[in-house]
Amino acid sequence: MAEVRLMKGNEVIAEAAIRCGCDGYFGYPITPQSEVMETLMIRKPWEETGMVVLQAESEVAAINMVYGGASCGKKVMTSSSSPGVSLKQEGITYLAGAELPALVVNIVRGGPGLGTIQPAQSDYYQSCKGGGHGDYHLIVLAPASVQEMNDHVDLAFELAFKYSNPAMILSDGVIGQMMEKVTLSPMKPRWTDEEIEKISGSWATTGKKSNRSRNISTSLDLDSAKQEQFNHKLQAKYKAMEENDVMFEKVNCEDADYMFVAYGSSARICQKSIEIAREKGIKVGLLRPITLFPYPTKAIQEMVSQLKGILTVEMSAGQMVDDVRLAVNGAIPVEHFGRCGGIIHSPEEIVEALEQLIKGA
Amino acid sequence: MTEELKDIIKEENLVYAKTPVLTDNVMHYCPGCTHGVVHKLVAEVIEEMEIQDQTIGVSPVGCSVLAYNYLDIDWQQAAHGRAPALATATSRLHPEKYVFTYQGDGDLASIGCAEIMHACNRGENIVVIFVNNAIYGMTGGQMAPTTLEGQVTATTPYGRDPELNGYTMKITELIAQLPGTCYVTRQAAHTPAAVRKTKKAIRKAFENAGKNIGTSFVEVVGTCNSGWKLSPVKSNDWMVENMFPMYPMGDMKDGEKGLNK
Image (cartoon, rainbow over all chains, first blue to last red; front, side, top):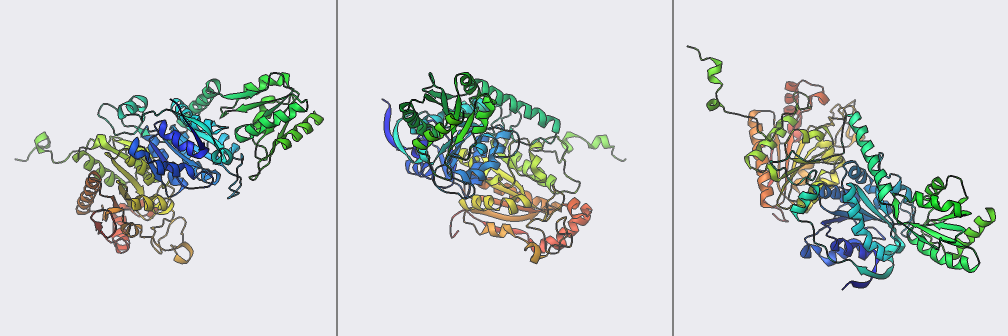
């Protein structure tokens, strides 16, 4: 029977990692996500599944431990919050450049700099538009509930191994800290050496057998022509993600004249705003991207002919709104609303912003 | 009657052969560089211990970034200074494997100072091969933490001045203080005798990894004749005269990990 529990989002990340057969977690404490490693240390999965858990000396070391573990074909992960994820960017671009599957969890807090420890969604650019150097993308998942924190861990590993690409769970301090009912995933065993050989034997550094040439995990190619070719290969991979793995949810969109576009905790707040607006006679729906990369561009475009305007709601000064505007391409008004710096917008504020949009439209 | 050369070159007269763990790729190292010798020694140890299929190397950023072209084993190429972090995870996920990092002095003692200190302090079951030539080779001869006082480099054109550039760092002495290390030694590779000693040290380090008794750290003081702007022969003389007094040869620690050991 499925196991149902009341848990914090951060705790669920840890539990889901153990249950999906994760081989290693490497992290460094930072608020508001320290419960991830704390939960793992209490759970002692090394006794149960053999999973390695290690507190690294820095975020930089942690992400590079992930690089080492991922190079072995293992399911490895790290978690952090915004300032820590900035430190990880070096390792993240190396992972992308070496085409290594891995999971990075970002429980976002307000910035820039040391910022605040309160929730925010101001790392969208960093997560979806690069962060580190070079032309690369992460697979970015945006859970909007504690249940999705559970589900996205396994999903992120699945997509990361499907595309040989690092994946990120982009959550925030609201989802990380709040408690909700969650149906936990059943236990999956960790991959055996034989399974890793089958899945990743062509590239994983597991010790060179006499029947194969040596495997090298690297992002270096001094030959520019080859490096360009490699970049084209990466771009083809991102295109395949856009064609095959976009995920989103639509709420109350059937009769909508207006639409919110929001992810994560903002999408949850927008559901209340929909109720308030509809009581006032405003027909508004919600499109919630579940994958932020690949982005549900087509799904937004398909709504344009039906809509009079879109309000993007993010706990930031307006980042994802760029992608909505690119999708809409000027056909209808697109405005941004969002509190930032650690302040969470109220459903009423969002409705007020929608009313402003309607006035202007 | 003088012996013909063709009569001498026979299988039974062979006294030396290149280890098959070393690939046939032409090395990019400058003539006179110490890396080639150290690569060969690591390769020979891997062959002699019959651990080619159980060894994972982690290469650094610097001149030896392309070490993976020369040793026929599985390799991970790390970001600058981060090799010990990669090796940490690899060793913990594969406790039965032989995991080593190969790092230069810029990589290990400057940008990777935190990673090497903490990997050694945790006593990771890894081997560290540290080639110290007191300069950044690949980027064109800039100052490293290990650069000697007064030494001229591209970024200390008037010689290293401690007031301006800080003091020469003896990182191996610091490493030897960490309880996670079991074996810390400093060697060189400028004479046949020194090469033999270095090989013995590398062998011991890899054997330690098989026993899981802590981190083994082998520094090899080497030359960078291109960076130093000296001929290979003069580089060796300069090294003996200037580097050896600052970096004395020998074991600093030989035991097993743990406090008070």
